[in-house]
Image 1 (cartoon, rainbow, N blue to C red):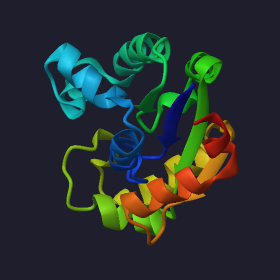
Image 2: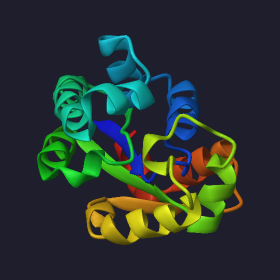
Image 3: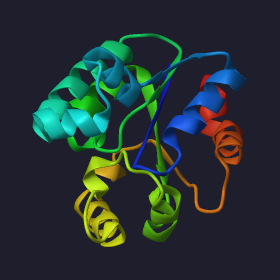
Length: 170
């Protein structure tokens, strides 16, 4: 069984996934990193050069590829859950874990980064709030969910590992 970490950008998916993989001695796959490696471009450059639609097509292919593996941790990009086909493929062999945080916490975590194409706008906090509202239903597609406000990635990983439904499969 795989553990799949989903959620909005800035909720700690990649850091938490990496810590989980170390603690569980499981391979770790970050779909955004795999896309960057495959195309030889940053996510920001992919959006700029090819657009979000193209990025989402590549993302779906990468998700299909990594979801076929066994006993791995998969961290998906924040928009991966927008495509129900991605969720369907990931759920076949995985438990979907959603990480979430308040818009204000997400903004604080991301405000100094310049590699978030969806936040390259005049008012990033308003954009975060808008995107969270638009994606609200898509982020409900999970088996278990954790609030990451005020927690380190290590603390979130420990919370995940202490969850009964996760401990049963490990």
